[in-house]
Image (cartoon, rainbow, N blue to C red):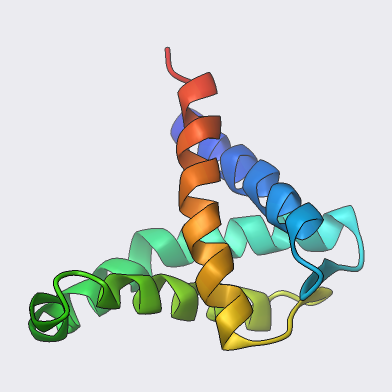
Length: 113
């Protein structure tokens, strides 16, 4: 339970950072941001691993760069499932997913025991 709560806090802080960095990403409220973080955490632990396995051949051919497309697709899916969260294009999601990975790593580093 503690790990799940930590993941949701990390995702929320990371979404707040990318919200500040990108004009193409918006949340109508803090509740929408937290809801998106919960959805993103669930998708990252369920859907994303399945997509990564399904796209192994393409990832091998692109030397792993296709995993960035998978990350962007998961981000778009999370935003489409959350009410009050908006992302304007795939390109925005693509760049945001790269920055989100760096921010997630930095924020998780703060929570290390």
